[in-house]
Image 1 (tube, one colour):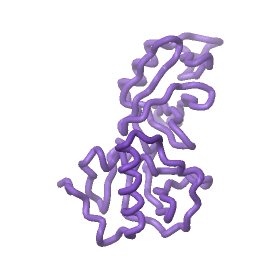
Image 2 (image 1 turned 180 degrees about the horizontal axis):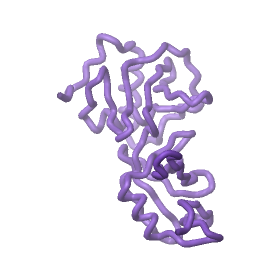
Image 3 (image 1 turned 180 degrees about the vertical axis):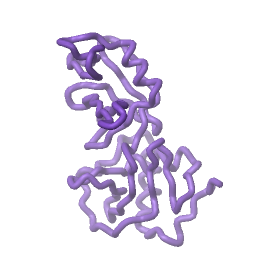
Image 4 (image 1 turned 90 degrees about the vertical axis):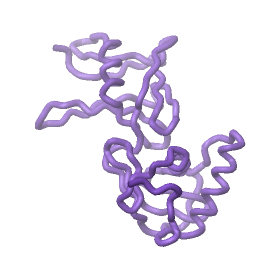
Length: 192
């Protein structure tokens, strides 16, 4: 079941909703992402919002079905120094749960020596020294989990087909398979 539109009246402070309305108007006018890294409002506690490992956003246990609402929330998401995730506006900050990475890289384009990723919320990011690709390996299964940094410590986990595309582009260097983007080599795994 999907709620359209979402009803935040029961558990959501009204300041956050007013802040979201103003941000939505700014984004509609083509303005850049809000400067969440500069905002330091009081922490108002957690809200029942969760980003699942598959990139689905949930509120009170129900998936948020409106892509525009998810995109809007994604623009005010911030990772705190302790690793927690918050939604932040100039007037308040609320905690949310993120099971893995908040975004999923659903596409990649290789052009002019650069790898540019598209996320499930519409962000585009080119892998470079400031936006590295990293791969974690599950110790028990050996399964890789690849990520690319999107912004402000927020990462996107690469969808399996995207990782396969990178594997097709990989080259070997000193026994390590990896890809190069914007002049930086990113290891993907050991060569067979």
